[in-house]
Image (cartoon, rainbow, N blue to C red; front, side):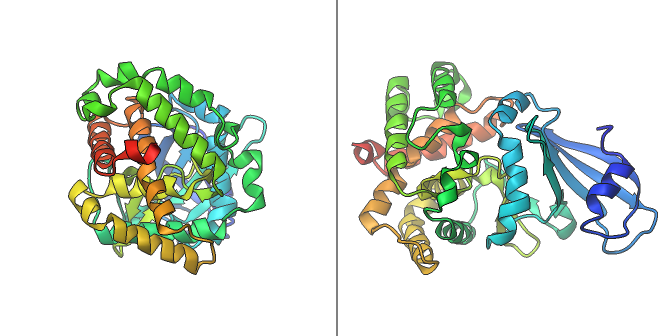
Length: 345
């Protein structure tokens, strides 16, 4: 907290606001989940209506998950996304005033606009969005996927999740899969349909999915596009937050996670095929070779497995148990509705 001095804030904000001089900064901690996020209220020696009254800073200090996130390069990746990638993609994301990272320590920070200043609201994993809002998110994802489809740079280490090539076993997955019996004893376990309570089944289907994904054409995916990483701006349009898991991946990792987490199960059942068709049309409209319907539908169905697994093994200090339980329930219902066992056969 002591590092957020007026002098430092003046230095990092000046490229976006030439001539700005910060005179005072009041720090308010928002959360310390996978990163420390702080809202900083600002005053200026030379005030201007153009200067932000507050900013949000996300950094790698103060989180119990910092060592794991640092080792995986996830903080630095998010800074790279905001600094180099997101400005060129047609996405609704917060404005980034400043970002930076250190190659040696892998530490990083991003300084974003405070969305509440323009009446933005943050979505929550225990709340659902409308079909129209999800359609908008999928349209944005389709544009990003198409613009990065099979890009040569996706094979660079930066874009490999935890540095592991697509389709290969990831020690991170082994670590948390081994804890499934422990997680099943929590309230989230009661929300999981009984047919998916077998740790061996979850382990085998997860690695089967990763193997299939490794054979597919990659694109840049958000990687964690669940409801809690979305926001609604002051004009009512949804946007995407939290880009530390961005990586080379299968397009349906984003599409399935968004639809299955953000929609009420009844809305998902009645709209998912139409939403997927529009996603594929938008993907093709941006120049990507969209898969045919049968292939796309099966891929979407299979990715219920990943959402189910990742939420089941989410550490309690990353998300509240209420949000985890609500989301495990949604993915469990989706896995039954979509007959994920048949889709994985």
